[in-house]
Length: 157
Length: 446
Image (cartoon, rainbow over all chains, first blue to last red; front, side, top):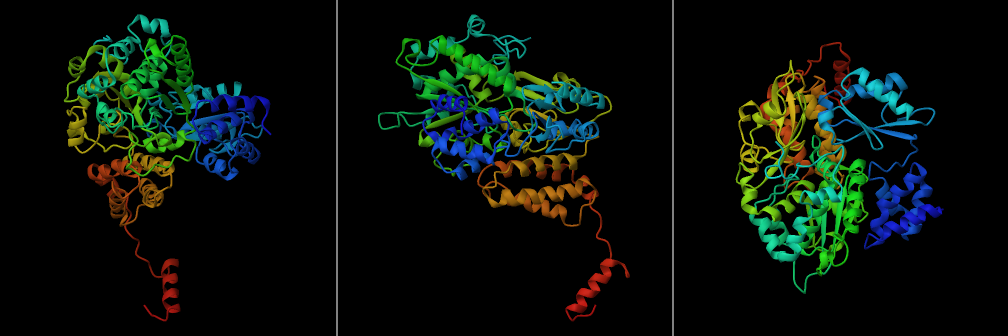
């Protein structure tokens, strides 16, 4: 069931698009914002709102990497693994997460706080290697110490 | 020195503290709107931009005004027309549009209005990649301010031109940068590219005429309207108009983005602007315009970074943001990383791309680890042909093999050295025994 707040946001977004289907991605993002991730129930709620088949919504949900179809931690850290960051040593970032939190890509800490995912180029290449948590960028992570400091910061948020 | 005359795009661009509407107007912001809407007809704007030789900065390099001229006009044409700004900056190694949007959001908003006027767009969409959260906030603020000032909405500046501007944030995937895939994403579908023709200027978003332009491309338009085509030509050291945002990532001393005349040399970029290679590292090669462009090497350092010169050298200007390969970075590792990216980002629609790229990825993985097999180079070369233009549905796979085929050309030894000779099955080895067993089962003897 959509909450009052979710429905209101969906109605507001609907004004910008000529056809209701165009709302699918916005709807997924809105529900994910409220619920943390997109469960089967969320898919059904959106389908009901858009008056379409749940499989159509799911086909969209599974295409886009910023839609989480599995539960994630409170903080989803996106590590850039693309070419500029790779050259500058991004492989070490996962290693530090592994050492400090026992966390690899696609995994979540036992306390459901941090999920680590790899992402494509984050457009922060002059500060490679880098990673992102929400709107916060962590760059120039060339040394163990700089990665560790970033991990500490993420845990403290 | 950053002056608006020579660096129109990045003058007053400050990601720490971008100008609000008032500050932007104080330095000439939204002037182009007054000029175009009140003193120029839409076809005059199209002609001006066409004659300025502004070419697309997203990678393809198509003449912007010419693209606009393809939009059907007149009473028989659909009334709804769309302008879409491709702000889905996802080409690995590219970080220029982020700067424009975070540091000078009003420039893009102004550009989106005046460009829309040129071909009568009724609604504009900025298709922004989901990770660019700061740009999202900045653009939302700028759009709200522009709306409040009467630059958006009905009867803009008292004329009969009306236009809405909407910010759409994406949910990820590189393929959304392909313009027809972007349209599908905007319509709320999976971002598979569409068959072309028809092309978007005729049949685009919801079947209506649609122009899709890159952030940097559009950002030039207000300045062309304000200052004219001769001024725009004068900014450039090449046959095409304007400045270019150039960038460098990799092992230089000062990676970054700079606005420079279109046509500076690669050497000047690396040595003067990038501060030269870091101590202990030597230049080995460069992807001149993002991940999907061919490697250039030492012999190309004095080439001008413009569309025609780089194309003649066998690569592409692309986005103009270079990725440097140094002598301590493995070529094979770099190519593997690039192919891994493209294989992951394939939308899966057509077979050569969906199946071919993972195959190339596996071969590259073996090669980078020094366990290549005889025939691997031939396999890679075959794929460079199978995945080339004309064999695939869109440009993703051809772009993916550009760095690969140029690496095979310039760094062939690296590939050859990674191949282990086929081991002779020694008598008594498991392999020899297995072979013997198999032959016996088939009723043959060795």
